[in-house]
Every structure is written in C-alpha cells, then in structure tokens.
Image (cartoon, rainbow, N blue to C red; front, side, top):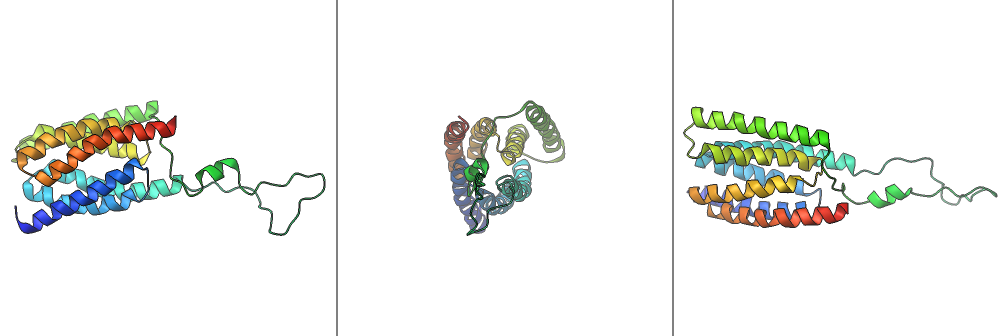
Length: 219
C-alpha cells in the first residue's frame, strides 16, 4: 500500500467515525461527511481491486447528496395560516391565533424523526437486496479477478439497501448494517486494510447503539 492510499484510508476512517456518530444522533450533517468518506474510499477500494465495495461508495456518494436534500425537505416545518402581526391584539370574543402549531414547534430546528418500516418499504427493500446481490455477484465472479466476490457482493447489497432505508429514516436499516458490518470485518482483515477493519468494528458496535437510540426516539 502506497503512502497516498494510506492517507486516504486514514482520512476515510476518520470521516467514517464522524459519520456514524452523526447517524446515531440523527443529524442531517452526516450526509456532508458521507460525501468526503465516499470520495476517499472510492480510491482506496479501487486500488485494492474490491470493485463491489468501490461501487458501493459511488452509490454512497449519490445517496449522500440525495439524503441531504431529502432530510432537508422532510424536516422543514409546514406553512400555516396567517400569523398575528406584532402589536396586533385579538378582537374581543375571539381567541388569539397561536403563533406556531404544536407540530411545527416539535420540528422547529430538529431533524426528521425515525420511523418503522412499512410493508411497501419492506417489499421494495427485499427486491433491492436480492437484485443487487445477484447482479454484483455474477459480475464480480465472471467479469473480474475479484478475490472474494460473494462476501463483497453481499456487503455491498446489504449496504445499498440499508442506505436507501436510511434516506427515509427507517429504523430497520440498522439491522441490515449489523450483518453487513460483520461480513466486512472478515473481508477487510483478509485484504489487510487494518484502519478500515477498525472502522467497521466501530460500525458493528454502532449498529447496535444506533438501533437502540432510534428505537427509543420512536417509543
């Protein structure tokens, strides 16, 4: 591994640690950090020949841009009726209009709340998972010299599906990440990406912490 690749791996690891902390906290700024992390790992995995992982981070790059926009739209407070102008008093016999509805007060300055997966989302997620795994596995096995096509395809497919669920703030994305991170640890140990291995160990623990944290917000 060259010095440039090592620097990018360390930078990607640092960005990844910040990303997962922001994800657990449910902060919109995680998507900006995700862009930086994705750019670093696109190069790192490309050099190592882990093409599915490289493609995954290309996907992450696009989804980070989409997630930033999506969370921004859904966290904006809804527009309400006319506000009472400063200095204007309510007429006798009429109740004063509230300055902000209860729902707007709850969301003012806060991010999108996590939700449980719906039936339609579960069906879409299952289709995305199976389709992406089969396609990537066949491509890696027959069109590349990939050293471990099946686990790399599985990791990528799980993360693709989890990231799609994340853009919709779905709680169950953490369960997919738990499996993906466990597989990733074994793969990256095998390829000698030690900083990345350490990052995915943190991701594994964070998957449990994130699920608990988001579930409490729903309850």
